[in-house]
Image (cartoon, rainbow, N blue to C red; front, top):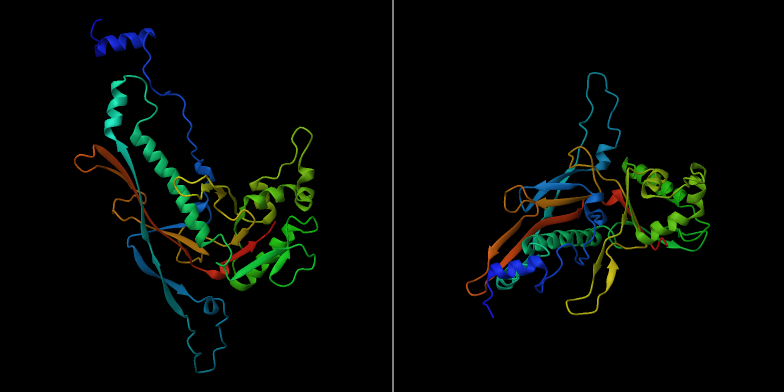
Length: 342
């Protein structure tokens, strides 16, 4: 039997005589989540910072919203108005993720001379970016979207005459979600001068609102047989009178490596957050929260992805990702959290 050469193997592959043990190049099972599901950066503005920690000014609303004008006395003057200020600080902590590539295995795949599913560097980078979204959503949920974070917190109950600090659950057909939200928006505006413009809702809350009679009654006349009225995120944003409404849909496996998968929604599926926030960092506008992001390498990239060779003898290449953020509540009176809404 003639000795096999690279040229003869390639010729047999082209003829279909020899089929190397390889993977398909046009199909693979990858449970990547859509970037559209990531919610961390949809509610509060990102504030790039040049230092890992620093201070920012807070001018007290009590002085800014007081009428400090006084009648000038004849031949005299009024006392100077006081504008109180103090500082708070942020601290960006660096998080890291590393994935390896076995170069020896990659050499074996190359020698098979068959199709390759994906460049391993590209695959690792894509995985890292997807998990960065998961990590940021986890940090957001811990910092903003859970009970015990905001001073103004209410709990949903089935009673049609709820006590202070409680509201009728949206899953109760006797509730009126629009009226409830309008009332709380008025409370915040009265206390801060700012009308809430952001709303983040859990997926169970969203599903309930889509079927709620008080919601359907408000939109039913906008549809036809050919184009029935649908309750979408945009429709809910208009009904609740907010500029932005997002549904917390991203999921994660909460089980450790080697354990049975435990898939859960990252954000509380039964809660919702009502808040006021700016679109961009501002010195003239308050915001309930900020996502401070530190450019730790000084190259303008807030999530750098780097590659480096492993130690001698490992025959490995490593892909490294870095991020440094501080998801900080900056104005407690500009956020309201509602738990057990359904």
